[in-house]
Length: 308
Image 1: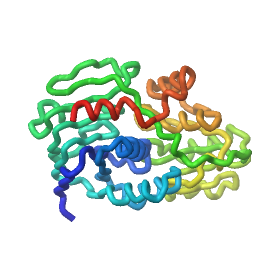
Image 2: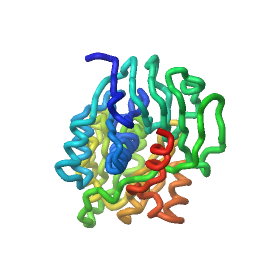
Image 3: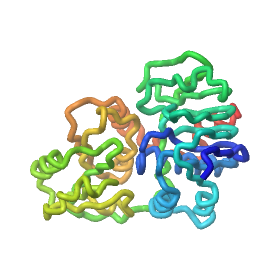
Image 4: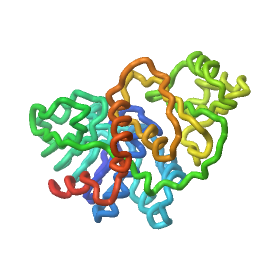
């Protein structure tokens, strides 16, 4: 497969950096924003660059969302897979994890839109001769910076979630707690998992992970249900979510605690540090949960169209 990706026929391409993100919030951000932008009339694509397979994305789209056959086909026809390309050519591109960690890849684009996350170094985009303009979209209540060196424009924006198009779960009591342990950011040790299980008196603990081998020893515990990510109808399978520590103790815009609020699922914070991303989401949930829903007239769409 060629490592040169030419997607200049599209108005806007959604992708991530080369960090091994897997089934993470940034995957769902690509799906969400692709959908509303296509609905607004933009010709969009999704480019998978860090090892995630197209079939996984299509599985998520089919199982989590209530899209019709035409909408599903739009994803199937406009999602591309190229592991760590060396050249990406497009008119406009949105990097949903807001990172320039793309190794030696050269991105040719008129506009790059960064949905800011944990990365603070935007050197890749500073006066990048292959990129005309870079737009850093960030929540001003989370990040202090208002300007950066070079042709980087900073815009006040908080990420939103397309839960209005999710499949509606059938709520039922399960006496089960959820531990979401994907290893890119949440791969805590088995011993820590066992300590959590001992601490709480749920009948079952649903452990979701992308690394079944890492947690295979948990299968010896009759209270543990071990399942690979992604999992279908996840909100039908647990009562409470136990939020565990993340790598570097950072979580830029946790989606799952917002989704739990939407479906009235309590969240237990099993962490001993303060995370600005978590605190901002908790604040947003308390103040105006509905403002976190991604809708078809979202400010992101209007901004993108204004600078194209």
